[in-house]
Amino acid sequence: MPIYDFHCRKCGHRFEQLVKPDDQPGCPACGAARAERLFPFSASVSTNRTRERALVGARGKASAQKKEKDHADREYMAWEMKDHS
Image (cartoon, rainbow, N blue to C red; front, side):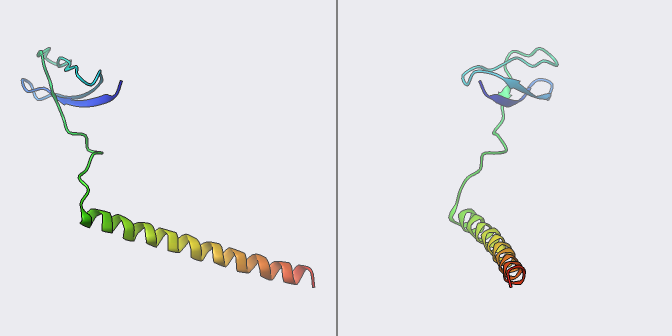
């Protein structure tokens, strides 16, 4: 069962609760019968613009990791050449 965020329409209390997807719990603060389920913050709408920004960020991270790996490889090879000479 997932945890959902809820908002009480009567008193305005916000709370999280573990519920079945079709259930609507009562408010723990005032006891109102049905609280409103809120849209989760983790859910987002994907557009071409957001996908492009994510792709640019991922490419930047991959490039930085590759540079770091290449640098470590060069240092290791230099150490191997010096150690075995």
